[in-house]
Length: 111
Image 1 (cartoon, rainbow, N blue to C red):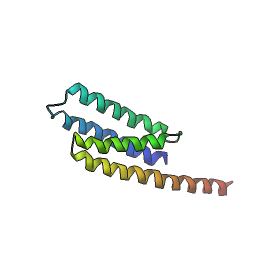
Image 2: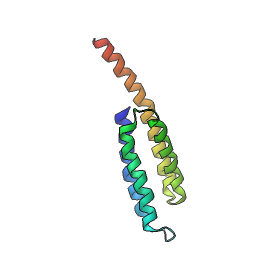
Image 3: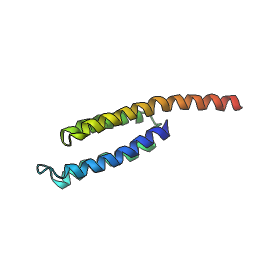
Image 4: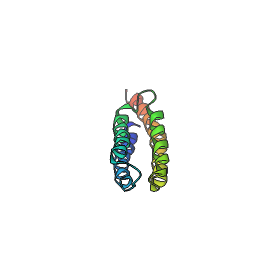
C-alpha cells in the first residue's frame, strides 16, 4: 500500500505546485498567501509518504484529498483534479491493502 499511496501523493505534490502558479494570477491573493498555503500542502503530501503505514496516515491523506477538491474555489480546475486524485487515493488504499494481504500470504507460504 505504501508504494501506491506514495506515488499518488508525489503526483499531488506537483499538481499543488502548478495550482499555486495558476492561483498567482488571481489579483485578490497575495503571492505570500498562495505560496504559504501551497507550501504547507506540498510539505504535507511529502511527509504523508512516510506516514502512510502509521495510525491516522490514511485519514490524513483523505483530509488532503478534501482540501484539494475545496481548492477548486480558488482554481476551478482543481475541482476536477482533486476528484481525480481522490479516486486515485481510494484506489491506492483499496488495492494497496489487497496487495499487502497477498504479500503476507505468499510470505507465510514460503516459510
